[in-house]
Length: 171
Image (cartoon, rainbow, N blue to C red; front, side, top):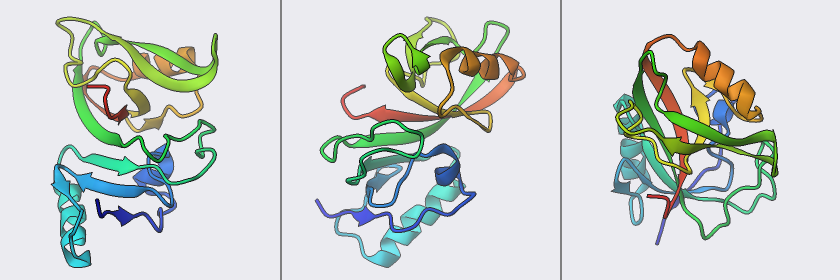
């Protein structure tokens, strides 16, 4: 499959702040639009169209870096991932999921992931195994589970934007 490689990540941009995209990653599709066989102009139209969307889903293949900027090992080049932005409505019961992993977890430093999604909660778009990158504008990279829990708890009730990384095959 033909795809487009990331040759620059803008400092201060969302991808640089959350560590979701890296130099050398291949973008396979954006919001369901495959980039295989696209001309440069077509790929740019898809990319610019994603800016206006309320939710962006990017499927990519990791480049050959040994370690991601947040200290976690990247996906293997054969393991496409989806980076997506979802908006949940936080209520008095929270966001409707529990956390696992994080810095200093029992199994060592691991990505911060969704452990369980509670039935009837607001987290219908979130799946167990999703890696949490950002919540309400705050990066969760390199945080312990407790630190991340405090960030999530401190968010006000109402709409909360989460940036997630989902491995292909995780739902």
